[in-house]
Length: 387
Ligand SMILES: [Zn+2]
Ligand SMILES: [Zn+2]
Image 1 (cartoon, rainbow, N blue to C red):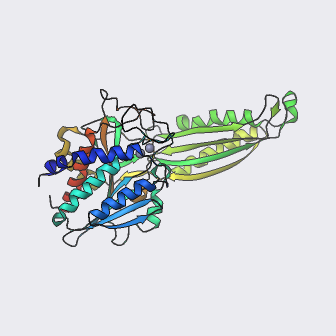
Image 2: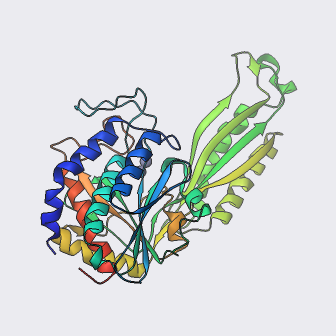
Image 3: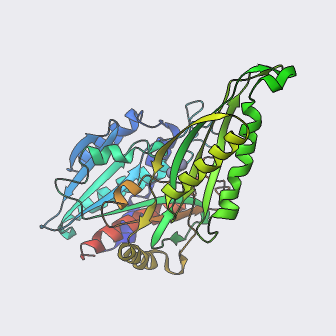
C-alpha cells in the first residue's frame, strides 16, 4: 500500500484542519467547537462516534475481521497564553492559543482515521480514535472512568506529541519512563500575626516559609540518588498585605516530579523538612498533596515496535530522545494497557518553530504533520500485521 502517496493526497486537508483548530483554540473541557468538528468528521467516515468526558469524542473503526483493539489518542485543548505569532492562522481568541501542538495532534489523527477507514479491509481488529479534552489538567482519567478502554476492550494504546526541541524529521521513542509523575502540594505555613515593630510578640510565617523553600532543595541535592532525577518547584508563594504587618499565614503551591522514584518517600521527606523548619520557627502548617499525573512509562515491546515502524518512516531520524520532567496524562492509558508514547520532531530554527512548548511564539513546522500521519497509519496497520 502506497502510504506516502495517500498522505500526500490529503496534505492540503491536513494543513487546513490544523490551521482551523489553531485559529480557534479552546481551553480544557470547553472544546465545544473542536468537538463538533471532530464528531462530524468521524461520523462522515462511517465510524461509530460517541461523545465522552464532556467535550471528548471517540470514533470506533471496526475492521474487516475479528482481532485486537488499538487505541490511538490525540489531545484537544489549548492553553491560556496570548499568541504572539504573526501568522495568518493566528488565534482569534485573546488570551488563548494552541501553544502545545494539540491542534496538530488532532489534524494528524483525523487524516489518519480517514485513510485507515478507506482501507478497513486491512484492519483485522478495531481502532478506537480517541480525542481527549483537557490534557493540560489531567482529563484522561475521565475518559477511562466513562469506559473508553471497554466494549470492545482495548489491548494496546499509542499516543504521540509534536516536540519543538526535536528537529523536524526525527522521531524519538524509548522504553520505560518517558514523562514524569507530577504531584501537587498546597502548603500553608501558620504563624501569629502582629506588628512588624514587635516581631518577638508574633510568629513570622514569612521567615519560616523562606527557609522551607531553601531547605527543601536539599532533598534533591543531598538526599536523592541523582541518577534518578526529581524536581521540586515552588510556583506560588503568597502572604502578607502591608509593609508593617506580620501576616497570620503564607500559602505555597508547587509540584514534585519524578520518573522512576518512590513518590511516597519524596512526599515523606518533604513533610519532614516542613515539620522541622516550622518547629524551629514556632510555626505550624497544613500540607495537602494531590496526584496530577502518574509516570508515563512505555511498554518495552510496544516501544520497540514503534521504533521499528519509525525507521521505515524517517530512516536515520529515529532517536531515543530525552526523558522529560513534564507530565502527560496519557499515563492513564499506559498504566492500564501496553502502550507507547513517542515524539515527532517539529522544531526548525529557520522557520522559527523551535520555541518551547507553552511559549507565546510556539508554533509547529507543518512539514512534521505528514510524518505523524504516516506514523499513525503504519503503526496501526503493522499492529494488525496487514501493511
Ligand atoms: Zn502542554
Ligand atoms: Zn501537550
